[in-house]
Image 1 (cartoon, rainbow, N blue to C red):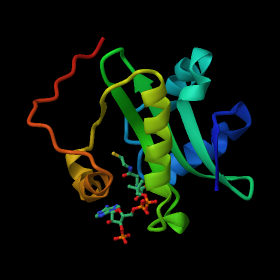
Image 2 (image 1 turned 45 degrees about the horizontal axis):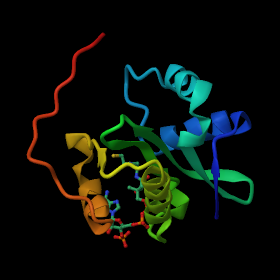
Image 3 (image 1 turned 180 degrees about the horizontal axis):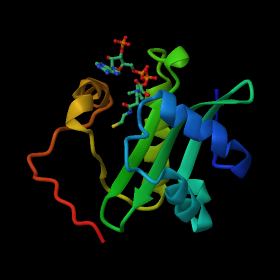
Image 4 (image 1 turned 120 degrees about the horizontal axis):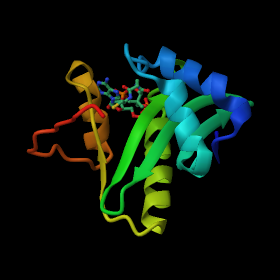
Length: 135
Ligand SMILES: CC(C)(COP(=O)(O)OP(=O)(O)OC[C@H]1O[C@@H](n2cnc3c(N)ncnc32)[C@H](O)[C@@H]1OP(=O)(O)O)[C@@H](O)C(=O)NCCC(=O)NCCS
């Protein structure tokens, strides 16, 4: 698998990957998110490509204090062979090179099975309350 940064030609395949991975929850305006992210941060979306096909992804953020990972996804046909771990490592390197000391991510309670995956990759559960406000 080759890891590359986002290219517009892969938009549809990437969103299809997110769909099959169950990441496109109701109410999410993912097309708008991609538009906003790719306006000046195309390099912060990484894709795993196998035989010209998008099989893995993550969208990276850095707010100056913490790094963030969204859309961590591996196509079901390619799971359990270490690709998820490879994508995380690649994203971590990008963040480290930006001077980022710590990376966070959010897991939906309904998807808590993946906590095992992140723990295997060195992530720890935080004792925090996550809050949000719609703008
Ligand atoms: C989570 C995900 C990215 C892992 O990708 P992967 O390429 O299979 O990861 P790796 O091969 O590096 O590691 C696989 C290991 O992680 C753990 N793991 C992954 N998903 C798991 C789950 N839902 N429940 C329990 N363990 C899980 C297991 O130890 C697994 O090893 P096993 O298959 O031999 O049991 C992939 O399962 C995925 O795309 N899931 C759907 C999207 C998603 O939920 N993303 C996270 C949003 S927060």
